[in-house]
Length: 345
Ligand code: F6P
Image (cartoon, rainbow, N blue to C red; front, top):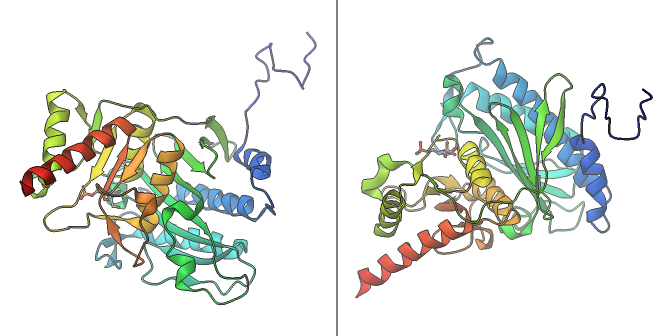
């Protein structure tokens, strides 16, 4: 049999390996009018750092890089060794790439000004989210947001370049280090997911144009905090239980979000008595996932406003987060609003 290398293989001898992330990014570059390729290169830099972090997380149990680092980050949370390693990997990739002028990281107290006169982009990143799960071999993730700087190229970085609402993101994504490693991202033209093929060292398009189910039967929330929830959240979760929805909570935001995005569901980290602004960070957790959610037809709110409309006033600002299938988020909002009305009458 003669095999035509340019046609889909009928023989089964040389199946196509699919579309690599690099090739996909290259083809999609034309989605951006006036794009000069820097954003594409930046996405490639992030993918490269993700491959390295994937390697480190996979050998964590063998290489004495599990466990606590012995310091706390600016949030007062104990840093894990892999938090620190992932931060170094992403910082290095972003600063060496040349496209970025400033970085906000969960692991850094202040903005990192790269003093890069030709860098158009600002990146907000949580290099390793859910890192307390590392030592027990449970999925963890990287979350990133990319913004175009507001002030002119070459001038010193200003806070207006950093404190942009999520609606200004030009791209956002996450990497899920799970049973397989996936990179999911959007540039505002839908959401695409890529699975890492370890033997080839490449991400391949595996989940083109992800669409979130309008509703679902999964709710994800830390129920241990129930006594500290507001009435509306309590009532919504009671409704989920009455409907016999499944409770699924990994405690790794990326993993919980990813499952609910594909299967239909809602993730909630609401305000609690002790944390009236919730726990999650707006700039490098909520915004990226909210952008992806909306691009996939899902929804994200803090209970009052659309996440992407919130104008940040501090770097490590926290926000309550309700994110997932549109109808479920709407229903949760209804409960919150109803409980407020009944509290005022
Ligand atoms: O970013 C913090 C984080 O680890 C998320 O990944 C996760 O969803 C959440 O905190 C878990 O918080 P808690 O342990 O309070 O449920």
